[in-house]
Length: 228
Image 1 (cartoon, helix red, strand yellow):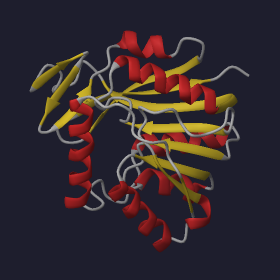
Image 2: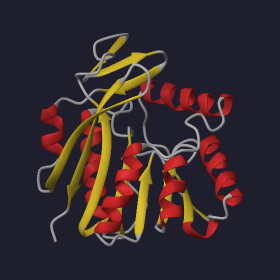
Image 3: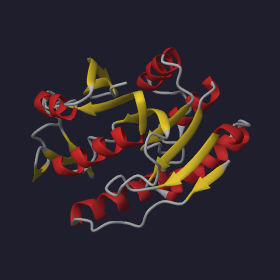
Image 4: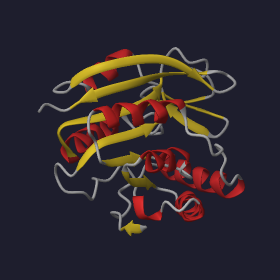
């Protein structure tokens, strides 16, 4: 396993700084908080990536790694990125225990900064509920542009977001730009118009509604591809 140096932290808003600290504390207090089983979107992404002939996969917001580990077990070379050193330490330990260190690299990185990767360097990108964190619309647009930059022609991007039909939308503390904080976690809830805007210049293959968790959270799973 290799660790890829990340870029330094950019200028953060007070909300972004608070959320970084909150996630760090949450991972420290709840090791392996999401369990060992991969998410349903990760299982879907593994099938889509395999069908497309992908080999090198970037996961954004990997956390403690349940999905990155699944992708590695499936046979992909995975670069797992997260802004929490605590989460990445847990992922490194799990990868060692599961003998997956030869298929997994780690990247400490905040997605508000440009991705420290060359153009057209990965076949696929996966992000489960990363784009709907405490990111402004401008930051999300910049991130999707970075994803497109690092994807090879015909590359696949699978991501999930909570949307404005979710029960927590409009609840808690509002921060503007469709960002609402509930229980200490800030979420940018996506209207469908934002999904469509982010797909401009891509081939939008699928927007799949689904539910997850006890509330339940209401999400979209989006699949889009770069032109060949």
